Length: 411
Image 1 (cartoon, rainbow, N blue to C red):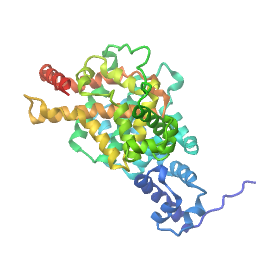
Image 2 (image 1 turned 30 degrees about the horizontal axis):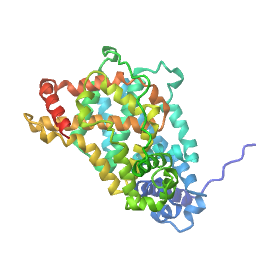
Image 3 (image 1 turned 90 degrees about the horizontal axis):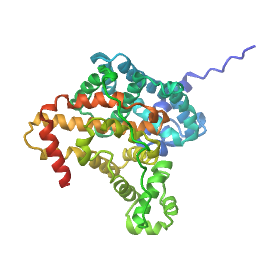
């Protein structure tokens, strides 16, 4: 005889909902690593022991939050991206951007949980079915992953990066309109029209090993530990042990952990993923494909994890946020120096640079979640995307190419 499950009281159900809603707000306010049952209970307006009576620890709360609320939001985002890839049109892409414009706190929290789960065992176990059933649902057919699925994955990567950035830096409607137009043109194109790009073999080199200089060694140790454990758990003592020095030696060079992480970011990102010098090159045949392949390569896993954790931590640190803004803004900073361009043309170039940045960042982020990104045929998205970017810029591209090259050499 089947036993009936004991029904919870109406008050308990209301409290459960209040706790989950408060947990979402707290994830956005303090981050997953600083989440506590006490703070969630306070945010929910409940008594001290209410959240402790419902959950044993924060991990159990996060598991319930994902299963009850966040997974469904992630599925909705992914399916919107796949619909845009399978039936591309102004309407299907418009539905995707309508979702972005009306993003809820739960949507932002679902992305942060998805990106963080890899280093929290209990969370990874419940997020894994979503990764397997959606992000890797064509992996069993590798190498015959369809162009449609791959394009949908890259749209999802752009969406993750865009929602993540919008929650942090704010909404730019004009830029979103440009990005939507680019995606419609990209997705409506026939990938068979574009010549296959021969990818580099072996893969691009990973972050180089440090020299004997202490700053260089600290940068590498910081890069490794922040990427492995997250910013919060990357203590100065752990970094010091990895660099074979003392915490006091770090204090002689950096005022705080924030300064150390920013220093590592500037040191090891000096080989820029996208710089003024190679901006022109990335719009040549095949270069954007190779850039995305490099961003997803397992050889660059160390960089992928650090860039992700830097982005997650920057939500709660103005100093880290400023370092990222400066890095992303480097390319846009050249635009005022360009001559013979109208304000509209300069704005379009600014948005095109931003689109390539978000595409690359999204691929980098998603590569920390699933290994399927390594096997994607980026040519089927990158070349149509590149052609869409150059479509309106082609008449002035010769002079623009020359100016950007001259500015790059001078920087």
